[in-house]
Image (cartoon, rainbow, N blue to C red; front, side):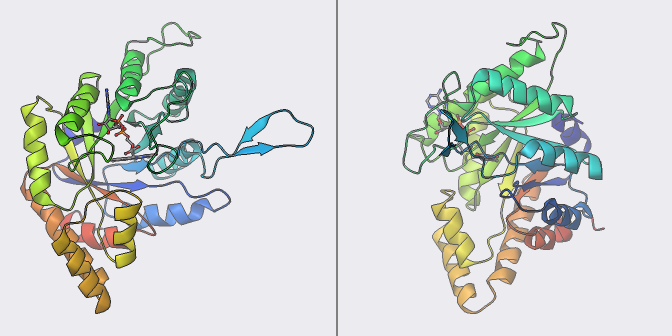
Length: 317
Ligand code: FAD
């Protein structure tokens, strides 16, 4: 089902987001995490997408460089979860590293496998502090990918194998309540978000945000510029100092000082997990009370933290 339809028919929902593992791991670890949370009826399951990391490997007697992929490709994982569990899966689709023709090919594979939704993203620069470099013939910004997906809705393709084909994804985009780390200002970032919406985005999933005042101000600001599509707040329970450091340093997430202190103090007392879960339940309830139809939980690890939050707020098994 298209997410926009699903959002209309489901009063309060939650969704989860899972990352494909590194290559050479087993899919069973992912199945276990999904099964743990499926009991609570998530409305949909997002699967993230790791852009190709170009590690060039020279083979003996070959003039070519080969590209190595660190993570499992999400296409198979998305299909496995969708058809094994009969649940709506939202594949993330990142245009970094792809040209337009490759993007079209890959998107048509997702459509072929029955996916009706896609989250359209640009992807990060290849190295921290570097500028983003698009692939030759690829896109610099996510709005251009959204334009391509919108054109597919009108059966405009580069590959005209079937002139009558039409691929009609319901398309989501990322939003950053505390601004994207590369944006020069929050106002500019909101303008760029509007560009994605004008290009055809149907809904927004937000970056993790722990400051509810910032979040509310951002929602007001984007509504003021005419962004009226559904917003699904992104949430990650913060349950240890290590996690806090990863979120800050790897994902550029702002942690308010009072929350940082709470996690450091409780970590020292050996109860950061319990304190973090309680904080996440309160924050989730606050967002539901503020009128958001659903919440999107980022899974890192086996999903016990998310289970401990959603079982207090959503359908019990
Ligand atoms: P864009 O919307 O293109 O924005 C990127 C930057 O460019 C911003 O600073 C924006 O302000 C600026 N910008 C946009 N348009 C213009 C313009 N016209 N002129 C000038 N500047 C402009 N990454 C992955 O690799 N895989 C994933 O699966 C993944 N899932 C994600 C899920 C969510 C919910 C979120 C919030 C992020 C996710 N990301 C993922 C991270 C995302 O790829 C990075 O944050 C990336 O750096 C930006 O992607 P974007 O789609 O927001 O890009």
